Length: 151
Image (cartoon, helix red, strand yellow):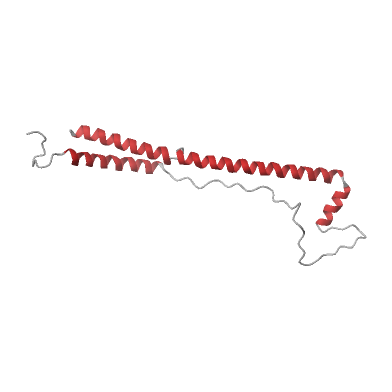
């Protein structure tokens, strides 16, 4: 096999290997796409939780706006009392959970993106060199000192 053919075949092998690595591991590759799909599901779940919380808080807001009794009860929950009322604080008393909100979850961006283009380029170069050497080794006839294939 001529050296030009070997070189072209090696370039082809290297290009295919680099393309495969880029397809799988690049910032727009298959693994990044699956990671983004997981992020979409997480964000949709968070959005639904926030909508539920909004609905609950809107109901409580309407109740506080319409009823002075609700305002008084809520103020007592917070430790306030009317003038003339006696307020007693019990030590080590933990009120029942309810109406204590944590507003949404904080969404943090995903992990820092690494530069995967360099890995794909390195894979291509190493694959080209390996293919060229393997082709040279297996197409060179053994037993001839001059290396020629025809006698």
